[in-house]
Image (cartoon, rainbow, N blue to C red; front, side, top):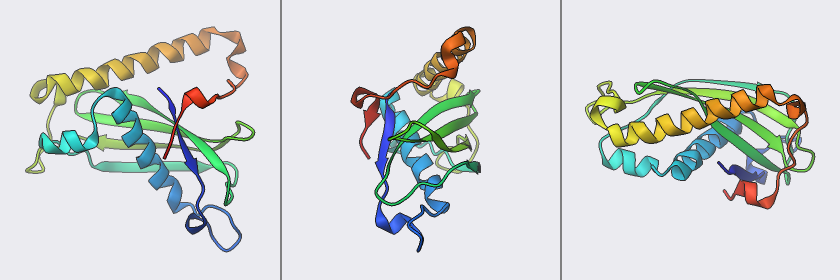
Length: 165
C-alpha cells in the first residue's frame, strides 16, 4: 500500500510551530481512510451499506516533534482483524529524514445502522474478504521483515510510495 502524505498546516501547530498532539489522531484517521480506499472499500461505501466502524481506543507515542511546513508520510497497516474488530497501527515518518516521529494504534468494531455489533464475515463477506486479504498481506510482510537481516535499514521512500492528502 502507498503511504499517506500530509503537509503540516499552520493551524495544526501551537505557538512554537510544533504540531499539537491532537492532530496526530486526525492524521491517523486520514491514513486509515486512505488505506481503505486503496483496499477497494471506501468508508462512505461502508456507511451506505449500513456499516459503521467507531473508534474504541486510540494510543499514540510521540517520539519526535513535527513542525509547521514539514511533510510526513503515514504508514497505516492492519495490525489485527477478526471480522468483528479491527486494529490499525500507524507510523508518522518525517519525509526529509525517514525518522519515525510518532507511532500509534486505533481499535475499532463494526456496527450496523442500529448500533448493534456485526460480524463482517457473516453479514458482509465481500467486505470481510478485503480486510482479510490486507491483513494477510501485512502478516506476510512482517514474516519477510523478520527473516531479512537488512530490515534494520529503513527503506528510502519514493514518490511512487505516497498518496496525497
